[in-house]
Every structure is written in C-alpha cells, then in structure tokens.
Image (cartoon, rainbow, N blue to C red; front, side):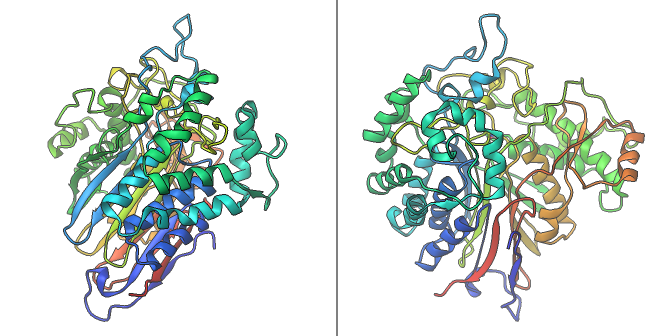
Length: 553
Ligand code: GLY
C-alpha cells in the first residue's frame, strides 16, 4: 500500500468537473492522514476542511516533518468561483530577532544556534492556519475537522522505518531536551518498529485550538507554557510575538508554460518565482524533441540561473523590494541566451553539503466539487529544533535557519543568500516550499513535495513530466536531479542514472555528485478533464498513501 494508485472511470461522456463524479482524491505522506481527510469529506466537509484534518493529522503522526510548532503554505482553488489564493502560514521571526543573532563573537556563523533548540524557532503559523482555513473556507466546525488528529494523539501511532531513520538522524538533539526525548525516543534511544508514540499533551493543545480558535494556542495556558520554556532554554519569544502572529492571504504566482497554466506560491516562498524563472528559460528550447542528455543539460542550466536569482533577489516581499521582471517570459529568454547547448556554464564552487535528512511534508487534495488544496508544511529539519515546551506536546521548528545568517554563507541545505533574506524582527524566512497547480485543456495536476532546497527542482521535473503526458505514478517515481547554482554540481539521486547517462553529462563539462540516497516524498493528484479519470500517487520513496474514493452525496 506504500504507493497505491487508485483510479475510477465514471464519465462515459466528456466530463470536466468533479461535481458530476462524486470522486475525491487525497495523497499524503502518511496513511492515517489520508484516512483523516476522507473521514472529513464523508462527514460533509469540503477540501478545505479535509486540509485542516490532514494538516493536524500529519502534525501528530509525522512529527519529523511538520506540526503545530511549524509553518507552511496552503494553495487553494475554490471551484464555485475559480478563486485561487495562497494562505501564508510561514513562521515569523520573533520581535527580538536581529540580523547577527547566529554569529559568534568572531563574527562566524554558528549553525547549531539556528538549527537546535528554541533560539532556532520562528513563531509558528500552522495553528493560525488551521483556524483560518476552517473558519473562512470550510463548512464543518473546527472541532469536527480536528477530531481525527486528537484521536491519533491520544491513542498513538506506530513507529515505522521512516520514523526510525529520522529519529536516529536527530537523536542527539532530541536527547538534549528531556520533554522531546520523553515523547519521541524510548529511554533516549530510537523506538522499536510498531511501538506506539502517544501524545496526550498535544491532544490537549489541539482541543484548546478546537474550543478557542487562535487563542487556544497564541494566548492563555499554551502560550504561557511556550514562552516560559522557550525563554528558560535560551530562546527569545515573547507573548506579544505569539499574540501578533497573523495569517496572510497572498495572490499566487501564475504563469504560462507552453499553454499550461501554472499556479504556485508567492514570497516568502521562492517556489513559484524560481519555477517560473526556470520554465520561462526552458520554453525557448525544444525539450520534447531533444535526447535525454540534451534535455537534462538545458534543465540543469535553467535551474542554475533560477537558483542564482533566488540567492540574489529573494526574501520576504513585505520587507524588501523584489525586481518585478523576474517572472516575465522576456527575462527568461534573456537568461536562456547565456546557455551554451553543449557546455556547462560555471558557478563559483562551494563545498557540497548533502543534507542527510531534510524534511517537511506535502499533501494534495481534490474534493468531489472540484475544490483543490496543495499544501506544503514544515518544521524545517527532521524534528525541527528538537525542543518541546513541557505540557504542550508542541515540537518547535528551526525555520530561522532558512534566513541568510551571514551573507554568502550556506545554510543547512547549502543555500546561499544575502541581504534580501537577512534576519529581521517579524520577517518570514525565505522558503523553497512549492505547492503548485498546473492545468491545460486536457488535464490538471496538484503537486508538491518536501526536500529542502531540492523541492523546487523536484516540482519543476514533475511539471515537465506532466507536460509530456506522464501519469501520476510515473511523475512521483521518476529519477531526480538537482542544481542550485552553488555548489556548482549536479546532484543525482541514488540509483536513478546509468553510467552512460552520467558520462554524457560529464562530457558537457558538468560536475556530478552521485548522492548516496534517494530524496523527496511527492504527493500528486491528476484529473483528466476529458475522461473524468482521477489518479493519485504517493512517492514510492516514502510511506504515504494516495487514494481516489467515491464520496456519497
Ligand atoms: N524549511 C524548508 C523550506 O521552507 O524551504
């Protein structure tokens, strides 16, 4: 069941809306989260209620990837009026944050400070996002949509191989914080497969949000516990920071790629802009006629230039001026002119940091009415900062590492930034999370994945495969490659590429880093508008579940 592909053929005639089929599809990184989403749809909820249920369920059963202590972006499409909006629930820097807060007395960046413990944590956005989604777009009470997550937190979920891997990766950090170790480890060790992780404190926090809305997290007892514990352990949160946290609704980034309409996330995620930067370059080449090596060469060169502009220009647009031309086709054409068809360009080399366990989570939903949600949520590194405030069950993020702590210095994903993404009070760190819709006359797709800086390149490859007509199953399983300008190297995932394919790229002057593992956990839903067929696929690299079901009217 790891990557179940389900599909139903219900339309005998041309059928372009799901209202006629009563089908819904959900793809998430955990079977219990997919189940929670369908439970809510069966109770009369819409895709937005299901997104609340899935977000909260993932916060419980996939604690390494996202949670109430983190943030994220939900991209919505409302079927009745084709309204599309990005819900920005990204973490926000606390009021006492300042640009040099992760530099030691010698002016050197201290990665430990921005990755481990509560100084690394931004003010969480997921609790506010749950309330906002439910109250503004849902039809069910928040309490109903949060119920599956409360149940999972009280009854526990079973430890899997994936959980073990990530808990092992972060064990030393979790051990530093007794409350986190008590919940997520077993006497300081990685728990056994099948053993249960129960989170009664987290269930109580979810119930407080269900009863009181935002105040259940950002005020009162939960806030008191969070602020006290964070400050006791070297963090800088205040009650005012929590009280002031707001969800921001933003206009998505949109663009056209060879007749395909792209809708993706705006700043503070770099995802939509970097995707359009790359696609506008690629539109100048004939990818479909090219052989595999030529195609990969062009895609890598487009990635290189798109990630370069990410590092130069991008940050929270509420704090900086971002050049307006970045997503124009004319600028894409201009960038592509410097691409040599046969030879790799050069970026200044930096040592490669192959982040061993970047995390985050993505889910894709379409309901029986055609409402859609693509959501990517994160606490950044696996198990975030590793810190839990006693009595809350809330594992805090380490999203402050997504800021550029020092100009030209790489973060944990090897991403280099500058002034545009410097730390400032109340600013939101630049993200790579890229929940995206793509649509043409025949099909539409909801897509996204975790994976740190590689998120955008994975989504880019998925979009190109969609344009080629690939199925959901093919798209999530395809081998992945990545270039992010610096380090100047193509990262190839393990097992995806033959020796001859690698050699062909090297002959064009590309440096290759063969990774020791596969990466990503893509969750995809595709609707074929003509046939009414829906496909949903969960990445074979992960432990998720994608299903298409009939929802009774
Ligand atoms: N923390 C990963 C990202 O937002 O890009």
